[in-house]
Image (tube, rainbow, N blue to C red; front, side, top):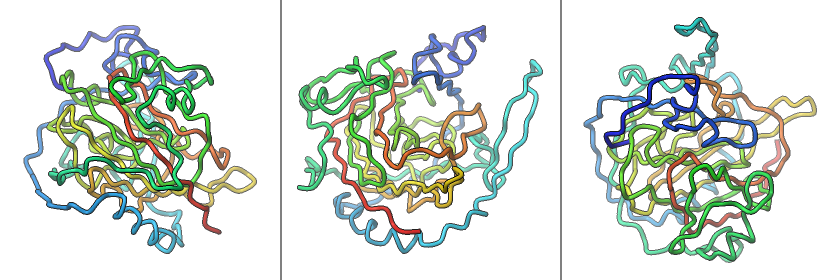
Amino acid sequence: MRAGNKRQEKSGKALAEDCGHREPKVCSIVARVCPRPTYKIQPMKTTITTTLRTPAFLTIAALAVCSPAARAHDDMSKPVITRETRKDPKGKDVPYMFIDGVKVHETDVTKQPLPPVVTPGEPPAFFAPPSDATVLFDGSEEAFKKNWTDTRGNPSKWKVVNGALESVKRAGYIQTRQSFGSCQLHLEWAAPVNVSGEGQGRGNSGVFIMGTYEVQVLDSFENQTYADGQAGALYGRSKPLVNACRKPGEWQSYDIIFHRPVFDGTGKVVRRATFTVIHNGVVVQDNTILSGGTGWMGPHAASEYKAHADKLPLSLQDHGNPVRYRNVWIRELADKPL
């Protein structure tokens, strides 16, 4: 977040305040609370400029063809994940997780370097959905009411403003009425034009594939936070290859190819999920194997895989910031045999 709002002092609402919110249920979904801390990290100076202008839907289509071969073998021994428990200053047990030796949400850039900055090319005016896509939001109130609900299946308090779907503080997550598994997803999003806050409190939302696996949405333009929580990150699991964020208020695009995880009869994951994410025409996740869940398990830990249905609703996160979405469409992909 950017701005001069002072953090409140710690109190009985410490979890909520760690997230930059005053109310503990501001970003809750059902019984979960998402208390994400705000960190300050020294800015990274490295800047890379790219002139990539290939439309993202063409790039991602090519990646979709390559994906099955690339993921033919899933070496479950990688990455190396270790866990430990440490005491906080009050003597409470706090879980810590390390992925290949790097702490989840590591704020020390010497241990977890920040992604280099890339300036994306100029976007096309509109990414029109292909003929076989399911259009989830086309800018109309009718499409919103037809395709989306809150997490209890009731009408959501999110609002449609000038053709965009806008998150409303304390309204909770929204989810699709229809369920999806492996898919190609396109959506466009914009952080608030009026910059407020810093770190995880600035322009924060999230795209939850199957309502479970989060691709982080964050205003990461000149806004430093832990690398695995930046825009385009698989939250807490995989930082983006680069930071391709546009300025606050500008429309940005995500094109995501997702292959769902597969579980055996005992609930054990036998093939992990994979993500390819293209942010503003720039690849930020390259057929990344998701090493586990992306759920919040504390300031330095993430959830593990937990068996679930083959198809679940897509959801978008209310994290207390008025992030906007538009042009949301999805194409279902066939699961590949084990």
